[in-house]
Each structure stands twice: as C-alpha cells, then as structure tokens.
Amino acid sequence: MIKVMYDNRSTNFGMKLQFLEEKPYKQLEFTSTSNKRIDKHPKLVVKYNLIEPFTITTDSIIPSEYCAGDTLFISYTTQKEFESDNKFKAILSDENGIFDLPTVIGNYNSKSSGTILGILPTELPKGTNYRVRVVSSNPQEVGSISPTPLIINPLPPKPIISRKDNLLISNSPIGNLWFDEKGVIPGATDRIFIPSHPGKYYVVVTLNNCSNKSEIFVLTDLDKILSQKYSYTFYPNPTSETMIVNVGKPCDLEIFNMQGVQLLNFPVQIGEQSINISSLSTGVYIVKFNLEANEYIIKKLVIH
Image (cartoon, rainbow, N blue to C red; front, side, top):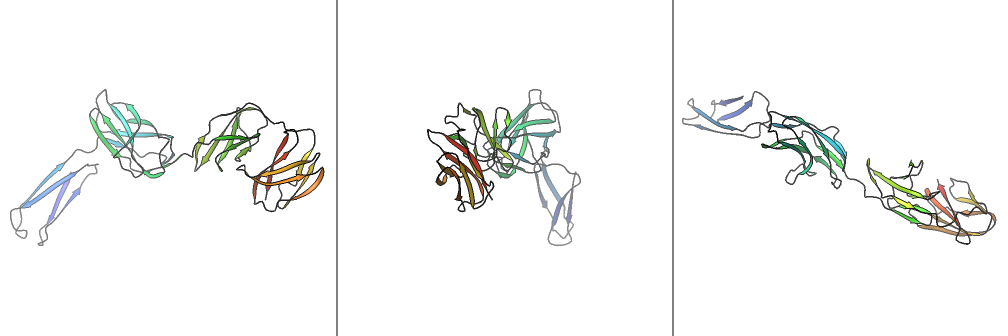
C-alpha cells in the first residue's frame, strides 16, 4: 500500500510517497497535476504505475569470502510456482557488481524455492563486490541481487616443478608444501625439496588462503649417487657467520639459495676447516659437496 501526502500551505507544492509495507518493488512511476492554484485547495490527481515485485529473491550467501574455483550454495525464495520445465540459474556479476556479461555458475530444475550448487570459475580476478542473482527460464524472470557482496580471491599461478641434479624445485618462491604418493611430506615447505627415493611428487602453493596444485612429477631415478664412502659434514647448523666443514676426501663445496642460484663455492681438504659465510643473509640454503666420479651429497643449511 502507498500513502500519498501533499502540503498546500505554501506556494511550493510538496508531495511524497510513503510505503506502508516493505516490498522489493522494481520500479515506481507517478505524475501529478493540479487544475487549480496551489493555494486554493487544489484538486490532486496522482497516476502511478507499480510493476510487480520480484518473484525470485536471492538470499545472502554465507560465507562471503571465497577462492576462485570454490563451490558455494545459493539459496533463493520464490513468490509463486513456476512451470514444470523451468530451470533456475545462478549468475555471477563481474568484480564491480555489474551484470552486463554475467557468468552462469549453477543450474537447478525446479518450480519453486530451493538452493543451487554454484561453482566459481578458476580464472576470476580478485574482487570485493561480486554479486549473485537467480533467474528463471519458464517464465523468464530476473531475481533480486544478493544483498551482501562476495569477496573472491584469485588462485595462485599453477606451480611448475623442475629438476636440478637430485633437487626438485618449485617455481613459486613462497607458499610451498610438498607431497609424495603417501601424502603430505612433513616439514617440506621450502622451494627446493630433496627427495630420498624415486617416486611421484607434487607441490601445492597456498597464497591468501587459496591453493593451486602442480602436475605430478615422476622421479624415475636418482641419477647421481649419494656418496656414502666418506664422511661429509658441517656444523653448527643453524649458524650465522662461520661453518666448520669436516670431509673425508677433498671436494668442492657449493652453497645455493632456495631459488637454485649458486652463491658461494669453496675447495675443501680432508679434515676440518672453517668457512666464512657472513655474506649470507638469514634464511635456508642448500649445501652441495661435489665429489669425484659424479658423486655428490646435498644438505640443508640454516642461517639465523
């Protein structure tokens, strides 16, 4: 119901419309005319065209934050029963809440209220004002826009694994977690992973609570032997400015960062010797003992 009020106490003719009940009206049009002077008890004629309220109401979506590729549930309420062959569709706006080119994210064959299982596209850009609405096919009607905006975060780029010697290297500098055929590998969160045996490996990268998985990397063999003939150790670990190296046979020692870039290279002799590593900043590094006959040993060094 609409109440029309006007004020004829001044030459400024005033009118306002007061809604006496709340309904999601799509549009309201009215015009007014007067056949007498405003200050002489005017005759008021009001014409209005009130389009029917939405017959499909899209509910708030909970939770309100998702990753691209996630599933979500879109509940809606209808004010009438639709035809038996009707299909409801959940459509997604762009990141600015505009439905000029909406994306269909779910379908549901029904004649009345229900819940649609939606799947977000994996290539969505980051946005904080995505909206959803439900539309019908028979008859064709457009529902209301979801009351609250959705926050959608993009997926990290799909990680790629490469191999260098017996090292597996993720192309993502952060957010890595390594897996083998048995599942997650405890503590394997660095960019570089040192496998102990052949097998199938993959890495999952997580950024802003959104994850993406690499293809499976099949390590068919460890093509260079991990030498066990002599002792090759260093201490302390963690360390800061120096490391004490103890080797059973002369070799070359290389230190790499977790991006696989060589930072230091030293020849070392049998026995103990001190090596200055003060040029290295805090972090995790790979130490490689290069031996003769294509043998080598790889270990991890922590600088604090």
